[in-house]
Image (cartoon, rainbow, N blue to C red; front, side, top):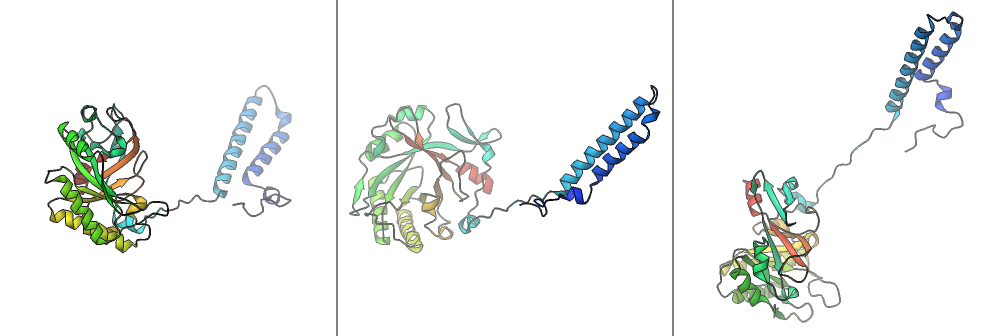
Length: 317
């Protein structure tokens, strides 16, 4: 912002000589008054005195300029309402890439994370042995999805193959379902479908519920209220729990914003946020950090995930 008087015809320095200007004038008058005393003996002393006075003038000018500047203020950054409820416990200075370019979260000498992928029929056939040998520790595998237009439940074409082969290769496995439920009854139907496809198999990770609005005319979930989203998620999770499994909710910041997160504190969050560090402060334990991973054994781009459960438990005590 321009200071007052900056654009007037006569400058403030002309109206009110500054201290440094007065020092300069004194130096000049002094030199003029005593110039007839210049001798070989006194000239060096006088030159030194003039130099000292000039330095004082420069210092006075700098100090005067600093004192006249407008103060610099910092704008405080406040969290949104949901971020005030869920605060990330992580110190992202502990995040790094290993020699294969995979993320890891370390504290001292301890690694407090596990790296994984999530896949569907879009990745086609996968060589899970190569994936495991590269250092991938777990996989989330899509069981199926509800179509956005007809609402029909469809099994993922590669679910059985991926589920069996990933486990055989030594990876820990979780599963997810892409939901387009618009009622709690449909959510229960989806949960029952997922459990039936597992056929009582033990899995290492919770069943993930992925309800995302989609673009286009055929979008079943676009007009749901926050309460409807929340009740649908709870219905899915409750049914999963009653069938002997645990549930988690997946989404990016926009998707998770559709829920009343304060009502879902019993369920861990799996957050999608692509970048060097997550761009959200949700209280999550799983981070999908890329949708463009490149791994041996998978011919297409693949989602990359970091399980931060150990880091979370240490941070929360």
